[in-house]
Image (cartoon, rainbow, N blue to C red):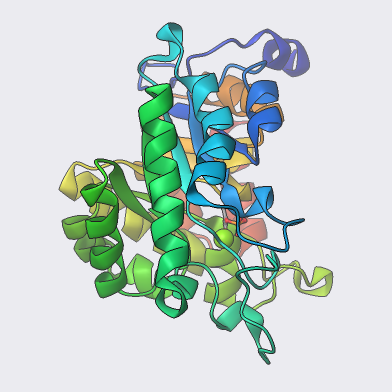
Length: 317
Ligand code: PEP
Ligand code: MG
């Protein structure tokens, strides 16, 4: 039965006909990275660095930050994981994740305020010290560190960020979590090496519905046709550019939605390590053609419920 198949699933993930999909872990610090490798993960698709600093009143120096990041990077720098990378996200402070030394105070509307990459424009040194810390940690551990910025809204932001990351010998990418960035995915890929879709915020901003508001759960649903359409546009841009596009929001942990995302051409899914076996086992049951059909019926549906039902009916499960 399904539960036994999930528990027995070992990876690496692929569709029934052998199309590989990287299943990666979302981590918060060294301890969660060490826990994550109990599951068959292939690297880290989202290291939320702001979670290391929720209890800090004062910004740690670049050297201290390097020690913190190295704790995560070293877990994925072993010989057997030589082909795996760690996507380090720069500080996503503000809104639902306040960081005392970074968060912009006194905003009426913090989700639409100076958060994520926007803080770097207020405080240049903050970004520079963090990138120095990440580069030092990558050098010390020998890990393959990719670096991405959260809350990117314009191509200019992506270009400036990419330049700073490349200067330090690292691979730059941006998160796609603002609709403006999804609409410009082709142009984003002209300036960065990869994209990662943050479906939690992309859904919040597309639907104009607070991700924390439980009474808006019918709107903050990544199966919403508008959200699926923006994901599809982003994945298509990745295929055209021949560059990786992953998903690192909660959507990646939904096994049925994972089938749809792979059908759109998403190349990696990053999630809580505890969700990896269920997603991997589900993908192993479907062919690439079925994934594509699942994407087509989900995109054609007029509501999240109908999209789920259509994919269930198609896959006979
Ligand atoms: C997202 O927005 O989907 C995401 C992965 O980032 P976070 O949940 O940390 O905002
Ligand atoms: Mg986000």
